[in-house]
Structures are given as structure tokens and as C-alpha cells.
Length: 342
Image (cartoon, rainbow, N blue to C red; front, side):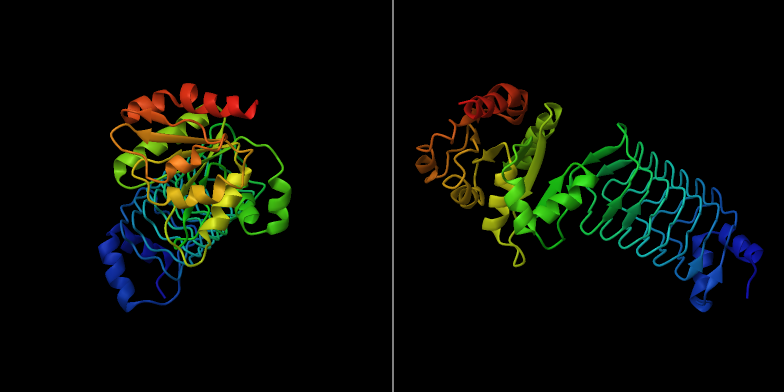
């Protein structure tokens, strides 16, 4: 069996040499406490390799493969791990301070007591990962998939960026929230009738946003509304409808609307919104509906029916995305809050 010094020397030759050698030497290897700091290991394959306590500070590990590997107490601070596969890996007490982990996969990974302070996890897959006592101060968590995540006693602060965390499976309609601790709770609400009955009686700061997220221009408009709502202290819940055999659209929309202080419904070139509103408007008279529409587009034919309900507010018609975003407070929030005060 090759020694750690021999394996280190091979890695210093680069990922291509290492991967070629591994094809003919696929057995279990140990690189415990090896010093690999600053090496270029783009695309290196570390399957079935013990990397406990290894020094990978500042190492280039983009697209590297390390499923089910052992990184206990390893140091990956400031490493570039974009697109790296940590699926099922054990990163107990590992240091990933300031690491670039964009689009990395931590599916079923063990991140207990790991230090991810200042790391960038934008787009990372955290499904079924274990985050217990994990340090996330200054960490960027944006557009991460967190379905099934176990998050207990995580260490966050005001510098932790959390936005658009996807709490549903790949094949389900996309539902996002802005807080990792809340993610498990929201999914539990959606799938537990007794909890829903209790939560539906509580007035919250949640705002449900319904609309069409294609093409890109429609998506930007609704994302602009979402961002402005955050600025004013609301908690936007974005429901991006996609057909799913595993989830009943009616139930999902009704549950989310029940939790909302008000609903913003984009009826511009509406596709799924008419169906969604048909399950919300008649059943929730206490929830104001704020319809918005791009001026160059006509409202869908049957929308006029809903205008007869007093909790469906007058349409806010805007000429472009910039005008919409600039008037979120004056036209959307103000109208909804005025209705709630009646």
C-alpha cells in the first residue's frame, strides 16, 4: 500500500495523474492529516479515501468527487469547491471557513459541528444533510435545496444570508422560504393537518406571491416584488407552480394562503393563477388579494368575476418592472394593510 507521502507526491502532479493512477488502484486509501494546501485538484476523484484532518486550505477542488468520503476535522478553509460532490460524506467538525461551495452537493452529508462561517453555499444541495451545531455566521445560503435537512442548534447571526431556500423535492412545485430554521417547520405545516389548523389562526407577516415565473421578464418582476417585501419586514413565500403528481395544487395553495397576511397575484398573461385564485378567493375573505398586471397585457377573461369580492382589491396596473418595484410599498402594501384595518 502506498504511503501518505507517496500519495501526496502523486497528488502534487495534478488531478489527471491522480485519477489515472486511481483507475488501476481503486482500493481504500488513507490520506489522514496529509498536507495538500493550495494544490490544483480540479476534478480529482476521492471516492473511498480517508481524508480526516487533511489540510486542504486554499486548494482548487472544483467538480471534485468525494462521495461517502471521510473529512472529519479536515481543513478546507478558503478552498474552491464549486460543484464538488460531498454526497454522503462525513464532515464532522470540518473547517470550511470562507470556502466557495457554490452548487456543491451535500446530499445526506454529515455537517455536525462543522464551521462554514463566511462560506458561499449559493445553489448548494443540502437535502437530507445533518446540520447540528453547525456554524453559519456570515455564510451565504441562497437558492439551496433543503428538503429533509436536519437543522438543530445552528449558529447564525445577522451576517448570515438566507434567501430562496427550496423546501420541496425536485419533482414538486417549488416553494421557497428565507430561513433555514423555518424551512423544516413550513414543510411540516404543509404536511400535517393538525398543525395547519393551529397556525392558520395566527396573523403573520407572510405574503404569498402567485404568478407566472416564465418567461424571464415575468420572473424578474415577481422577484423584485419579493425583494421589496423583505425590505419592509414581510416574509415572502413564492409559489412557482409546476405540475406534480405528488402534490395537490388546491391543498398547497390553500395552506399557504391561510398563513399569509395578504396575497399578491400577478394576472399578467396568467396560466396557473386563475386556478390558484379559484381556491383562495371564495374561501379566505380575511386575506386581501392584491392583483397586479402589466399595462400592455389584458386581464384574463374570468378575472372580472373575482372583482366582486371586496377582499379582492383593485388591480395595480404598471408600465414596466421598474415602476412595479418602486411602488410595492405605496400601491401593494398600503392597499393590503388598509383592507386589513377595516
